[in-house]
Image (cartoon, rainbow over all chains, first blue to last red; front, side, top):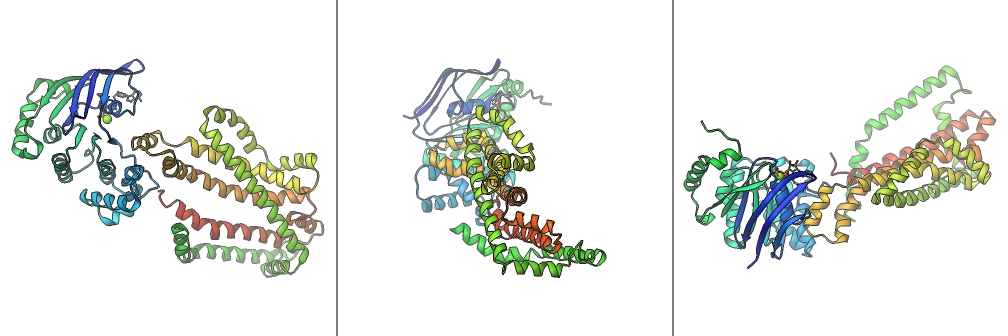
Length: 245
Length: 260
Ligand SMILES: Nc1ncnc2c1ncn2[C@@H]1O[C@H](COP(=O)(O)OP(=O)(O)OP(=O)(O)O)[C@@H](O)[C@H]1O
Ligand SMILES: [Mg+2]
């Protein structure tokens, strides 16, 4: 079975310890969310897992055949149209232009972009549109393992919910595996099988929260209830330095 | 191909949008005529007479030959500057050491007044083609070089990382990331290099050559033939305007459509 396994991982930038003793295993078809405060080292951990940063201490075993990455910033090529940006990964895989255009168009429409947007350059897109293009670019290659770094942070709640539902559908039907970063605990509850709570200074996993029901069967009520439950949790309150009145 | 078609398709619209420019040129000519009426023919010949002289140039075999000669020199010099500047600039951009080493040299080259090069060229190569072309090359080279170097050095690490994460081949990286980015810097540098070549060629000819438009200008000056001198200036400016606004501007518009 394909899996991503992180063992005893530490990471420092210079003398600054960002991540300490990280351990988790992500199995095929599962979603793990990493939740934690800003500057806690979430992006760093994701980059390490994806091989974009060199590993210095610890071990990462990744047996997935393919993976793709949606960055925290959209990172679109400014001289390429929306359509060309989305199909970048497909072209890299050697898929024909025609087929790539078709698949890119389909996913763009699914993500709430309009046909007239496809010819636009990134400079003419809103922040949320750029984020959707970047997310579509990563998903359209149908990777075995998908790395998502806060893909919905610039979207309104309606659009957010819609794309989350798309993703849940995808997980159920394509057996997609995701390592997901978010600030939004509710989003993590909705989408993941396991939530890792990463505190900062240094980044350490202080809690593993498992959610047994499959995503597609989770009702909003269940999600809200769990959210209320978690907001009473001491570790979560401490990690986010939250005060509940 | 698609690109060329688009340039041609947008061309009539582009011309139409040029009315403002045309109006300002006519206004300029009107002021010129006022100057003529105030100061007389010797100081400022009338536009009518000057344009007449310009048309006359094309019947004058000597002057036609001079114009072609100047054009050839400018093109050769610019082409050499373009090739050398682009290649060296790209290399300097890709290797950090090369870029650090080339900085002071480029500063010297950019800061050196072209007139000094003409003098040196005359000493080194004597009067004639070589001196003129050398001056053109040495004056336009740093512009192209800096453009190419900046283009190569400013490629964003974040985009490189993104492209790597999608596993693009080396050739795909080149066509999707490196080429468009570098081109967006190097193309404007070529355009200003071309303008520079055209100005420098005339200046170099004026001092270090016995033929070409520059030399014709020197002759007109010694004979106090203001009409011919002014007509030559009109030819130079006219060709520069034509090149910039009719040929390069539409291309630039398409090439840079993705910019803010
Ligand atoms: N290349 C780098 N060099 C030095 N320090 C870095 C580098 N990248 C990140 N850091 C530091 O590491 C820490 C963690 O950064 P990281 O981007 O992983 O945070 P994050 O959890 O993703 O935050 P956010 O939720 O705001 O995106 C920060 O303090 C940051 O300053
Ligand atoms: Mg981050």
